[in-house]
Length: 155
Image (tube, rainbow, N blue to C red):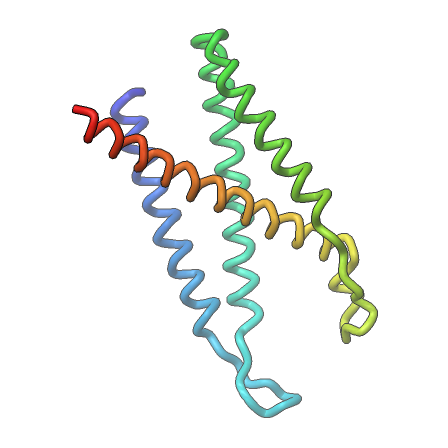
């Protein structure tokens, strides 16, 4: 990869990380006065900003994945096999997450129009996919460490 492109991507990732950390901090610390209870509650505007930024970061990550995958396919069509396997595995994880996720009873909520059964199902799917990918990541790290130790002691 070109050094300038690599540097640009690194700087972009750094900026996105800093902005994300700041928005997350404000989402957790900003408070407003609640007219109903008289106490303070988290500021919904700060939370919305952090969530919208997260959605944007996810879209940018997916777009980058697609663009660089297409670029890799153009450069080396045989290399698509590894990328194709990754795409298929990710689709399987999404399918498992969606299949396992269940809805929830939203009839007791004060604002049922804002929280629908579909949005609950999508949220549950996102959480389950996150848990699955976290488990896969931890297992991959542990396996890599174990293989590294085996290679080290084999010498």
